Structure formats: C-alpha cells, structure tokens
Length: 410
Image (cartoon, rainbow, N blue to C red; front, side, top):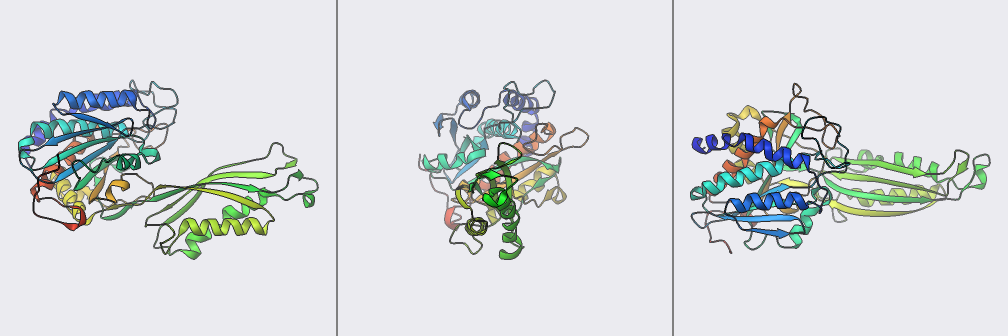
C-alpha cells in the first residue's frame, strides 16, 4: 500500500465530512436527485473529468490511466428515503419527509474524494476507472442503468462498492465471498370475501380470518418446504381492511416481502415466491375466499465474486492494519448492486460505522440513523487502494479471464 496516497487521503478528511453533510441536508428521492446530480457533476468536472448523465439523474465519469488495461467500475448510490428525520444536529434534512436514512450521502462523499485522489494519481492506474453515481437504489435503479448501457462503452471488467453499516462497529469492515445480501420479491395481495354483520358471521364470507390463517400458514414455507440452510424470510408489512368494528369487510389488502439468500425464481429448487402463491391461493380457497396477488421481482441476491473478495480482504488488511478488523457479514437486506455483480465480477463491502459513544448505532432506515464520520477516510482508502490493487493484479475479468491487459473501448 502506498503510504503517500494514504496520507493524501487524510488531508481530505474535512472535505469528506463537508460533502457528506451537504448531501445529508439536501436529500432527494429516487430519480429526483436533481440537486445531488449537479453537485456530483460539478465536483467531477472540476477534477477535469467529462461527465455523462444516465437513467435520468445518474452521473458517470471516466478516468483513463497512464497505461491501457481493464475497466473497473466504482459505484455509489444517490437516493434518500421517505423518512422524517428526528435527529437534531445542524446538518439535519432540510426537506420535510425525506432523509438520508441509509448512508447514501456518505457513499457519494467517499466516491467523490476517491475520484479526486485517483485522478491525482492516475499515473498509477493501469487501465480505466468508471465512476458511477446511481439513482434510486431503494427501488432497483441499477436495472435502469444496466438497460442504458452503464456496463458498456467501455465494457466493464469488474465492479466494487461499499456501504456504511451501523450494525458493525467502527474500525471494522465486513467482506465475505458468496451471497451477502438477499434477493427481494415484493407482493401485494387482495383477499376477497363477502361483507356482512359481525353478529351473523355465517351469512358472510370473512376475508379477515382467511388473512390471519394465510399469514401464519405461509411461514411453513421456510420451516417445512425449504431447507433451513437456505435462508428465507416472509414478512407482512401492511394490512388494511374494514370500516367499522361491527362490519365484516368484503376484502383485505396486504403487502409484504420475500427475501432469500440464493437465486430464486421458477427454475430454482427453492421457489419461495411460487410456493407463497400456491399456499396463499389454497388457504383462501379453504375459507371460501378468492385472492389476487401481484409480485414485483425487485432485487436478485448480491453474490460476491471469490477473487474480487480476496482482493478486497487483502486491501482491508492493509488499510485497517491487520486481519482482525476484517470480518464476515451477511444480511437478508437487499441491494441492487447485485444487478452489476450478476454481470461482472464484483465485491460489495460493509464499512462499520456504529459507535455507541457517538450515538450512531440506530438501524438503517430509522429516523434517527446517523454514522460515525471518522470512518469515511477508511472508506475512501478502500476504494482507492482497492482500485490500484485491482490493476496491479492484472485485473479480474468477466467470464474468469485473467492476466492480459487490453486497451479499453473508448
């Protein structure tokens, strides 16, 4: 690891914090990141990089190194959440009902400063780096960027990304090969019965009792139909029915999610969503009800490439000063970085940002979410040194190709 570059990163500590806080004060929802995109564009253009818009508010910039070689993509997400912030610090959200409650503000700040450091050291870059600032991560915005060619022109050979993670304490980083974040299918369901009086329920067809039975019964999927070694979670997040306590409603509306740490779908052995639909329909039939089910396949599982993971772990040992700081981390939460790592070798890392003393242990998506800003420099170091280490290993390429550097398609 180049100590001179590490010292250079430290000189931007205040700038890192300022960038993160500016983004935090001005959060914007997915595909509405207009101000955010302008700030990102301006910063990159000031570095002498040419920027390109993609997927409405996404921003891309290319750094061509001193020598031809593979193309590495570094990605940060941009969008905030529809959450009303309850923190009271000076840089709290100025947009009512919108908050960076997941750390994307930090991701952008780290990648911008990493772009600055790598641009200043492009003599050490033996290839091309594609900086990608992606909109709408919360609802699979990566798919839109893939559709518009983010992995092409030039063709991306590998991808790296990281996420600040308050469940991991500051000073540690989670890097694990294989499945690290869950696939996500979102369902909306309406159960139809026949309304009536609660005093004479035999004259009605009660969709509420069908819904109650259904919620319980589908839980047998992960305990009786799928191996407990294949993590599966079925959760109901919204239930709505009725208008008054003495009226049996004619329908119940429910929404929820199915998460899994393996490749789902009709061709999989597990088929969690297909099993969910089958059981739901049969439970409704048992209670003389019918149902309509709408499934949105939101995210596929995020699976880290073994070789990219090994490279990232070696980099982390250098950045954090030893193996003890590098831990395994797997979560059923989902991330659309998986759309990139499904197509090219990739690694996604979890930068510990939880500090009990500083009060930064609230979970992600919580209105009191905050991070330990002292970890931001290490995040930049992981991106910078990870990129340089990637080129020094001659690149890890799509399809398992290694070794020969090629001139990128510019």
